[in-house]
Length: 324
Image (cartoon, rainbow, N blue to C red; front, side, top):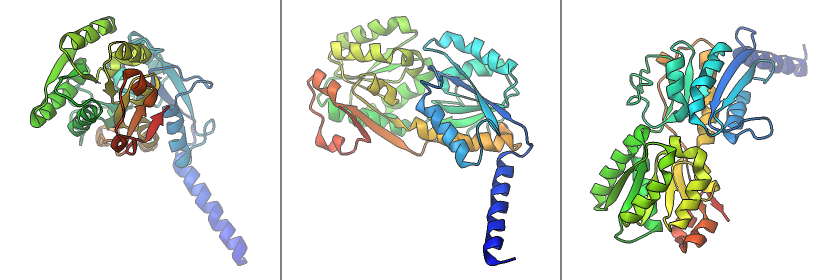
């Protein structure tokens, strides 16, 4: 065999080995995705695309090695139990879902592996026994990071300097964010105002409470309730002259001022590694929950102008994206 043929054989063997690793049993796997918003072919969220890229990088080919079963809450969290039950009936091999959809999956199954595409407090919310040893059918990513909340507070103070208190809007699942904000504010000598949100119908009351409390700005952590209402939240923020910061960039894209938090697309790309391990036989109980490694700062200059704010150059140069 000449050298060229030999190298060609090695390349073929390497490719076969990689594909065999991607498809250990020869079956076409069914990956369930429980999403917050619509994920049709025309409107698929970039997070889902990131998962598909991650699987492709690992050698998986859509249609040959796996297919996806995508179900979306369409802005109605009350639909999650029905959608979760639907995925269970389809007997998918693994399910990926964001924090707001996880309680429904916890109720629906204790056997199908569930990969958390980030939730604030998986231990406190009862999804896993510990980050190092999940112990059940849930694993994935945690956003449990008081330091990130502190950085959002600091950014808000840089954007809106002054002695006015900062209002922290939270719901029950995000109480850990309120506790982290309290601790960070106490350490820095800042005043914070607690505003608990119990359901979406209280959104107008949130802003009335912030205005009554003479808040200078809002740190919003109630993503599960407010995510479907991101545009309305942005409108109320501008109407009430209350700059706001969030963990998710979608709020900024909808018209709010700023976000700082984990890069969700990066988390979904990395979630492919969990999928790969589980499809090859690993148990979620034995796969430690991971933390985000990539964070992003997004600023909406159009909103800043509407609020009469000038964004400091020191923040603009740090921003990963500036929406004009």
